[in-house]
Image (cartoon, rainbow, N blue to C red):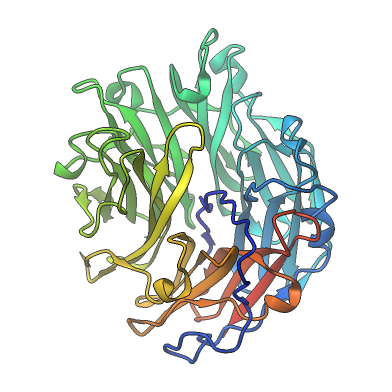
Amino acid sequence: MRRHSVRPAIAAVALLGSLALLAAGCSSGPRGPGGPFAGWSPARRIPGTDAFLGAAGTAGTYQHYGSLWCASPENCTLVYPRYLSYTAPVTGWPVFSVSEVHGIWSAPREIPGLTSRYTVIDFSCTAPGDCVAAELSGLRPAAILTEVHGAWGPPRPVPGLAALNAGGFSQISAVACGAPGWCVVAGNYWTPGTRYPLVGHNSQPFVASERGGAWQRAQPLPGYQELNRGWFAGISVISCGGGGTCTAGGTFRSPSNNLLQPFVTTMRNGVWSHAHAITGPSVAHGNGGIRAISCTTPGNCSAAGTYSLEPLSDPDRLFVATEKDGTWGPATTLPGPTTVPLRSDEYPVAAISGLSCAAPDQCVIAVYKTANSQGEYAGVTAASAYLDEQVNGTWGAMHPIPGLAALTRSKLAEPASVSCSGPSDCSVSGYYAARGSQHAFLITETAGTWGQAFPVPGLAPLGGRFTTADFVYCAPDGGCLGVGEYRPGSAFRHAGLFVTLRG
């Protein structure tokens, strides 16, 4: 089964100082099922990525944002922005892709005409070297790129989108593919004259589908007019499976209470259903939206999102909703801690790093909750990582990721990705901060028992003082792949990508 990893939302954190380095590749890690590293191999460089990811730039603490697609742990494609210099975001960062076929990584290739400006590149594939990509930006007309047999074509406007927004702004928010020649993109467009389009004013959602290799014209999302007050609506995530079925989720502004509410919609055989509001006590107060979707079979999906009673002052809550045989149930709030400890000048934020369902009613979600400071030195001051698991349809209480507290003393740790090979057999990747450095971690669940989080082995020889494990992918046969970044210090010079395998 193809799984498109959820994009990481790791905060850019400055971890400068003269404190001693905690080596990320030491042999004495926390022990759990499968030994200290739960069967994960030492990290190794992905050849050539240091020339792309870490060019001549220095300084800065921006986090790279990429995307991963895998058909199996030995057949994957990565897309990452290429960091050039501290001032590069003014014009954008070029983007490169790198693929592996049967475990052998090809040379990285720059994607022509695609740049990243403080944003994420989303893409999906049907095989390594056959992909669709888009820049998630609202500062120019939305465009898509197609890779065929390893060769990227130029950016192309989404067909029909210009007729919808008549010269206004537009952006793509999600990309997904279910089979060769069958992909979808979703996004937003704004009416001409909108002053601040990225805030969401006058935002209208659109969808466009590829059928048999030909892109159809973009169309407004069916049914959103009945849900939306007209001020804001948007799709944030899409999950596609075989048979031409895709499920998307997002946010709309309710006409009954003028608050943000979550919705879902499904495409079957190229036809999108009317947008369906997710209801229930958990989201009745508003300020909510879908942030992650995972489907096991057509008509059987799980969605997760956040909501809050009052922005900035009230802790974000996390909710889940389940679709069974094509019918969505009400949202329920995940039990557990609502926020990290706050000072008077801080506000709470909760975010979903990943949701993975190996079978109906068998899911794992990774989340993090942060304390954010306000004012002149605004930023993340604390971050706590949590897991929750659904077993036979019942969600347990959210709990901290085991072992992270013993690794970090800085109160900064975030998961980035989660993937399950089967019920109760999952892996989570992320990072934690300790002693003036930043380290990639992994944690694995085997037969329903979570081990302890451990530093990714083998990163110390790569010069990895600042590392993150951006993605993890696990196949149904139990094999897993982890991908992340390494760099020797706060500068991006000599940065590169690493890969580690399990099983």
